[in-house]
Length: 322
Ligand SMILES: Cc1ncc(COP(=O)(O)O)c(C=O)c1O
Image (cartoon, rainbow, N blue to C red; front, side):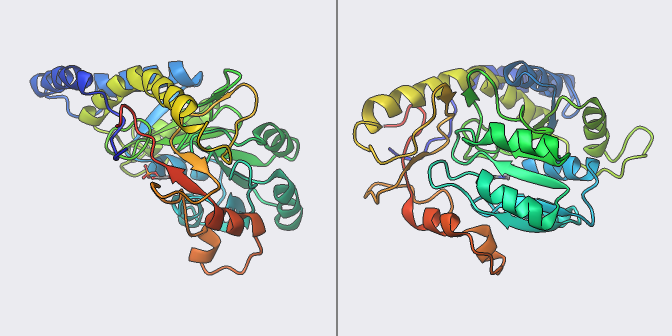
C-alpha cells in the first residue's frame, strides 16, 4: 500500500466549486468557509472549535493563555518535536515524562512522579498514532485535582473516540493538526477545541494580531479560505475515512499482526498509524524513531520511551489504498 493522502477523489468537484465561489466573492480569508469548517469540526468534536494556520499557532495560543511562561510544562518524550518546542517557544521549561509500552502515550505512573518532582503548571498528553491515550481518564482526574492545566495534543487523533467521547474533551484544550500526512488534511492547518469561553475569545484575538483591541499580543495564525473549504469537505468525509481504515485493519491486518497496539473496550482509533511490535518488511517505519529527550540532549532515564523507539513499526494503512 503506497502513501495516499486521506482525500476522496469524488470530493474534488465539491472542493473546486467551493474554490470557484471564493474566487467569485474575492473573500480569500476570514470568510464563510472558515466559519463553516469550525462549525462542522465543533459538531464532530462536541466542543467549540477555532481554526489556525497550523497546530503550532494553536499550541502557542493555549500555552500563552494559561500563562506558562517561566514555569515548568511536562511533556512526553515519545512525540514529535513540535510538542516540546511549543513549550520552549512559550518561554517555559520542558521536562519529559515516560510513556507506556501498550499505548505509546504518557505514563500515568511516571507522570505522578514527575509532578511531585517538578510541580508543573501544565502537562501535554499526546494521543500517539490515532488512538486515545489509554490512561487519559486517570491523567485528567489527577491534573484537575492538582489544578494542573492539561493540554491534549490531538495531532494524530482525528476521528477517534472512547465510548463516544472525543479527543480534546479531557483536558482544558485539544489541538489538532491538518498537516498533509494526517488522517484528514487541509495541506496545512490546525484547530483548537475547548469548553473554556475565555480561551475561545483569546484564540480569536491571538490568531489575528490581537484584533480588535490589541490587548492580546497575537501574531498571524489564521487559516485561509481555500484551506478552510478543503477542511469543510474533509470533515464531512472523516467518518468514511476512519470507517474504511477500521474495516481494512480488522479484516486484513489484525489477523496477521497479533502483536500490536490493542485498544480498550469502547475505543475507536482514527488509525493515523497501524502500530505493531515486531519488525515487518513492508513498513512505513516508526511513528518516531528518536525520542525528543535524546534529540534535545537530555540525560533523562525514560526506559519505556527508549524501548518503544526500538520496538515498534508501522504497517502501511491508507484510505482506499491498494
Ligand atoms: C504529535 C504532533 N504534534 C504536533 C504536530 C505539529 O503540527 P503542525 O505541523 O500542523 O504544526 C505534529 C505533526 O505535524 C505532530 O505529529
